[in-house]
Length: 288
Image 1 (cartoon, rainbow, N blue to C red):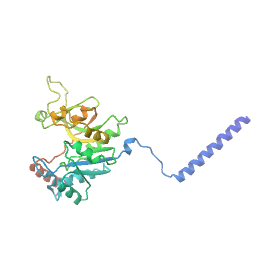
Image 2: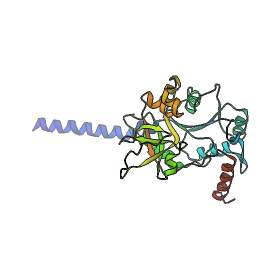
Image 3: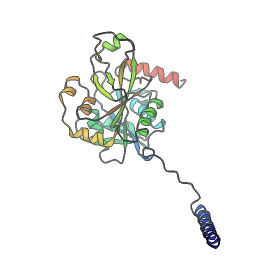
Image 4: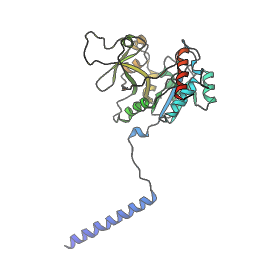
C-alpha cells in the first residue's frame, strides 16, 4: 500500500509539473502550430513566356485591350487568381518589357533563343526560389482560377511525388476537332497520367467502341522546378521533332505528366479577329 501511495504521489507530481509546463508554454507560445503537408509549404510561381514575333499576328501581345496591352491584361489576371507568390513575364523583347514594367509588372529578360516554351521558362527560373512553376499563356488574358487551382491540387495530393508536371485536358466530342491536326489529343492511363500526345487521331478508331472518350490537351502546365531544369539539358528526340510537341520530350525521358480534367477552354488571341472578339468579351464581362 505504501509503494502504491508513493507511486500515486510520483505520478501526481509529474502530472502537475507537465500541466504547469504546458501553461507556461501557452504563455510563451500563444499560437498553436499546425504542421501542414509539404506541398502547402511549397512556393508556387507563375511564368508567362512572351515573344514579340508572331507569324499570324505580329506584336499581338502589345496590342490594346481596353486601355492596356494584352500581355498586361494577362499578367494582371494571373495575379488576381491569388494562387501564386510571384508572377513574372519572360521575354526577349524591349517592347514587351517596357509595357509590363510601365504597369508595375515583373519582367525577366530571356538571354538566349529557345526552341520551346519549356526551354525559355527553364532559363528564367534557374536562379529563382520556386518549387512549382505554372506556365501561363501570354495571349490568353481571360485566365480562370478554377482549372489552375485543380492543377495545383494534384500536386497537393501527390504525397509520394510521383508527378513531375501536370497539365489540363478537356473532353472532345466534335468530329471536326478530333480530326483537326491543330487540336492536340492526349491519351492517359487509368490514373490520369499521359501516355501520348498527338496531332493525329488517338486512339485510332479501327473499331467503334461504346464509351470511348477523346481528350483535347490544353497547353497550361505546372512543373516541378527540377523537371524544367532537366528538360533544358535533354536534346530533342524524334517524337517531339515529328509532332512538334515539346511535351513529348518529357515522356521520352521518362517524366510523368498528370492530366487534370477541366471544362474550361481559354480564349487565345492568335489573329486580329481574335483580338476583336477579346475586346467584345472584355467589354461584356466588365460592363463597359
